[in-house]
Length: 89
Image 1 (cartoon, rainbow, N blue to C red):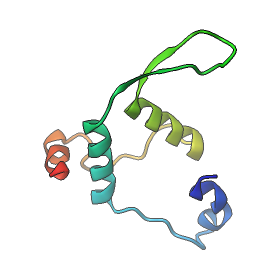
Image 2: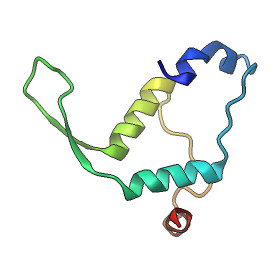
Image 3: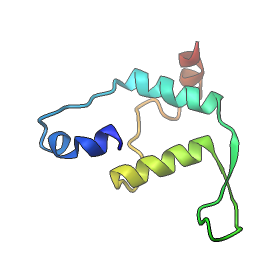
């Protein structure tokens, strides 16, 4: 079980604050981007259909599902690719 699911009530009631600094979020996303790879995903084990996806697409999909978000929260530097590239080093 995921940490955020296990401690959902405590997080929601602000009894437990989970804060990942923006710089860390950007570095994580930059690492995922640098190691992105295509993936074939079989969503239904009873069907032979395979969806083409990627590490980033699946990460975004899982975060949206887990947190019941409509879209990912955006960092103030999310569209600045030069900044993301600089974070990798």
